[in-house]
Length: 381
Image (cartoon, rainbow, N blue to C red; front, side):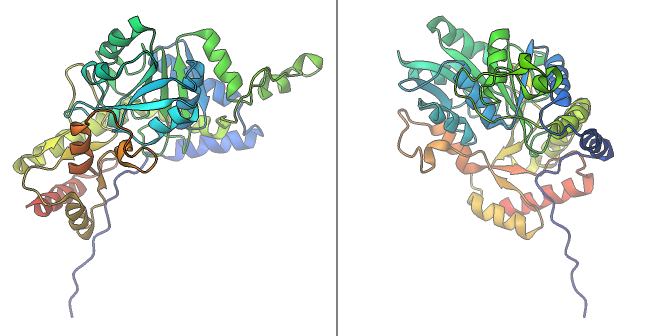
């Protein structure tokens, strides 16, 4: 009796990690210094140089990076922060952590990002900051948002969680941001397992963020170890946090940073191939905005009119061995923020309801991509 062979499931994302990362991590372990130390400092310098920014502060995640960014910007109780609802819930949560109120703005339906036009109606005398997200690796038009709010004394924090390798008007996304936060989660192009980075233009702010990530300690553990004696005694001048990156993570990050140009090149090549393969569907695949180029951290598409419900499409893909995902979530539809929106969010609700994310990773083969495209065309048809 013959059986039909079961093909292995194609995952949404597989990090590009190899022997070089394994060796770097092993060397950190053998060194005896595995907590925040010299490799973290080296990773900070290399990341800052890559972006062309003066300061980079490594932390334990992008969520903690956003939290520190808002603390550094002086956001607190009674303040409002304009954010996109169309973002991972950590964006809104970071505002709540500091006691402020997230105010949800709609997004551009093509890019999934905030625009100056969607932010403007929500600005009040209580607006302290705007968090502008580079959603899925598509660069937000930071220049336009900053031109709108800076005359009002409002800080723009760039949530660049997905943006490593993306370009805004030819420069790395986040380069000109007053404060930006990056993620190194395994779903991102550049990964350290977990981890994040805050970048900023101001040296005093960077020094404060370094203290805050380490319990508010006036002298870092690395400096105390190097110095010794009474000069290494620390003080705690404000309440801080335990948001440190380890040297093991940073060792991996240094290798990953060198891989970044090739990662972006390959993902853009694969996205272009998806666009050709899926042409018969008449669907809209995420694309570069006029003001920049994305890194395709997420390759999302909007299901065409007349397509089945997205849940049914995802079930059909899963049955065909394709592990797709729903599109970006909308925070205002989740329990902690449900009913808090002040204005209608039609583009946000369309994108979160009708978009899905396709498998896209460095080692994706043409045969796998052909399978994904064929399965999707069948599922939608």
